[in-house]
Amino acid sequence: MPGLIGKKIGMTSVFSADGKNVPCTVIEVGPCVVTQVKTVENDGYAALQLGFEDTKEKHLSKPELGHLQKAGGQLKRHLAEFKGFEGEYALGDTITVDFFDGVEFVDVVGTSKGKGFQGVVKRHGFGGVGQSTHGQHNRLRAPGSVGACSYPAKVFKGTRMAGQMGNERVTVQNLQVVKIIPEYNIIMIKGSIPGSKGSIVLIEK
Image (cartoon, rainbow, N blue to C red; front, side, top):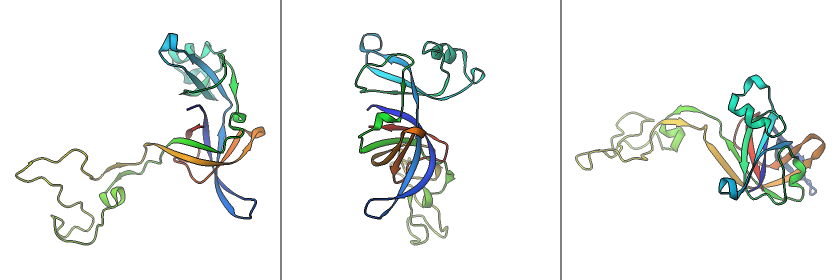
């Protein structure tokens, strides 16, 4: 789906026409620069690669620098591809938040907050304190039996255990667009989106 790259600013709330207080996430969207135009003839599919947020030459590798110089030398920190754009775009074109004018709902892709190594109670919602059966014994927040015995004599892949929680790519669909402020490249979306303040997100139609 076509979309733009943005940065999560934080949360606020606005009052709707009927007086309800609506919680909103504020996202700085663009301006994004077209850094590459992919075509079916050359790449096997049609897409636009967009760049967001200015950076310095010293923060880019030589291949990245050469790639961005083809787009007019606009050095961008974050790159992402989007398919399904209508109309013709050329290298170096700038797409602003006006792209979402008239759009009521969007999908937002972000990276959730990392919560480190967590146990099964927090990570998977295990009951914790309760039964003393199934290998639980007297450890209040332990996972208990994981199913290994004489047969199948192994632990199946995908068994819910303790481990790294969060820091995953998350997509939230059908979020309502509350307001667009073009002069500040701001879009306000109803509800929450994954990630911390300052994290990079993708907003898709």
